[in-house]
Length: 512
Image (cartoon, rainbow, N blue to C red; front, side, top):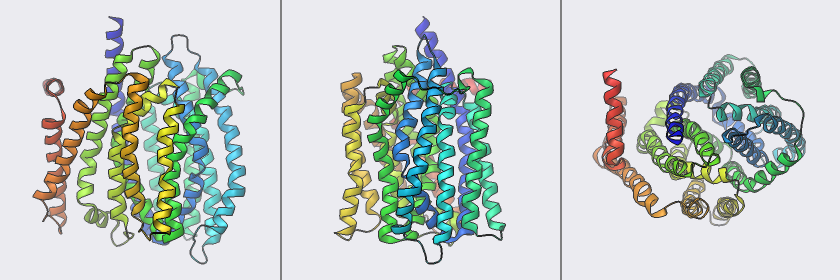
């Protein structure tokens, strides 16, 4: 009885938190897309590409920090799922670790990072001074974001998604203000943009800190480094470093390869694709952010069957939510980019957009599986295999571009191929580590995802192949694609119990 009560309460929290996160997502998507349009018009393609290339140098240091950020989130959430929890010691140790790492990042940035900027990054003539300023502000921005990680983790672990959503919306509005400010500024727009983005990061960091200190007892930091916990977190982070670092190296390393072989214009196209992917991914990350704490807490409390149901349903919903938005973008990338950016669409942008969205669809299948595996804490073999596979992206990209003359789009062709292999590896690890029924997953989840995706992409392409040109024709094609995708999800993606459940919820809502 108690287990059923906990499951019902967990579902209620997931639903409530998903609503808050989708409110955040919808506003941030609109604000982010409009902000990007203003910024690229204000900076121009070359300066926009310089910002992406220089910022990418700093982002490479998240190879060192991403694994620890994941460790902090996992340990805080797992601690809160235990009956005898002491989240205050986890939080204080986490902040101390992030402060130490921040000092290390600053030292590394001002040595190896500056050397790479001065000697390897392709910057247009006369823009190196601006690039140096962008680099320094990007380092500070990165440090502010790094120190905010424990506070973000507390909000997510406590499942306070209303506050998380509210602060996120304020951050989006501040970035919109930055876009208008640089458009009107008589200063060097690139330097001014980097400075204002750094200022926004500082403001957001303070907001998270003030809210968490006032609402959660464990978020009151005191300097401490619990020796046993420190060792345990670093052991987890050490193995997770392979997976987290491999993902960063694939994305930001690919960005640097584009700069080395194809110049800042290719970085601008990469940044545009990343902006589109970030906006589309919000439809999934909002849902997964609400779901992840329940997966970790259910494993910590011994409710393994409930956790596995969350993993299965979470995989299916992640793919379907992403597909609803990605399908029209995949089919109408060129006219949508022209509508969004006007005449400032970088070369290769539409190909990059399609590549990154296909990659995201493949990875969405295993979002909840990754959370479940990380929740166990036994991640050495998993990270060695999956992280090792992802690490192959950069050497393969380099060989294909440098020695075989491949074009810039090859970075996504390679990434999609390796992502499919990684998906198979994750499924096998779920069976080995958590006893997942692979046959049931392939039959009930993976096959439905594949059929719905094929239907959502191929049928609209065949039916609406001639819908190009006018704004109204593009809008009609996108709307019809979404409707056909919804129909495919309802008929082919949902089983009978899921359709009955949704009908009951819709009827209850209409009756109310």
